[in-house]
Length: 84
Image: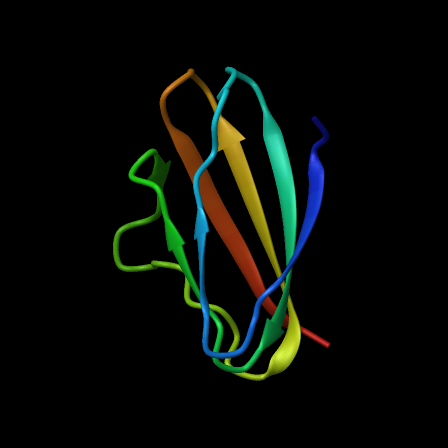
C-alpha cells in the first residue's frame, strides 16, 4: 500500500515482479539489493524500452527501478544500476 519498496535478490534465484491493482497515476520506487547472480522477470503488463531490458547488477550492490502508470493496464519501467 506504499510507493517505496525494497527487494533482496537471492543468489541463484529468480524473482518475478507482477503488479496487481494497477491504478492510473501511480509511481513506485523499488530498491533491489543485488547479490551477483539473482535474476528478475516481469509480468507482461510491465513495459521496458526496446533493447534496454533490465538485468540486475552482477555484483553486490543496489539497483533502483521506477515503475510508472498512466492507465490501469500498463506499467512502464526505468532503471538505474550499480549503486554501492
